[in-house]
Image (cartoon, rainbow, N blue to C red; front, side, top):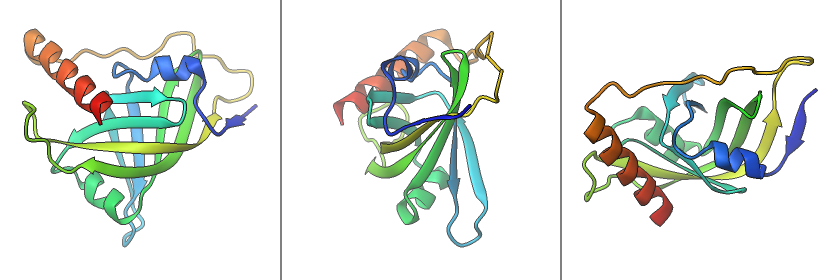
Length: 150
């Protein structure tokens, strides 16, 4: 059964610390097409604030500047969740980071447990970043620091 809240639980704040695969959905205002992307640099700063980084050239940035409604979906805490809110582009293009990224902040408006009745996730998805291991650490640290510093 779906549970609804207007903020993230402490468990979900811990879950969203840059190492969870998060699917982000926005709707392009003119075409009404859904634009979806999978991200990992998604951080819950607190129960009402999520920050994330995307390539500054991403169409998602342009879409959110026109229509700030956003939805995140992810698996964690033995269930599946959908989080919706309003996004603000805080930094259009970083200058002092290795990658030129847009940094965005989302005001959480609704959190839903969307797992079907009687279901429970028994193994969370895992992923690896396939580029140079030292670069993974460097980029992960840069993004986390930049997003927390906003």
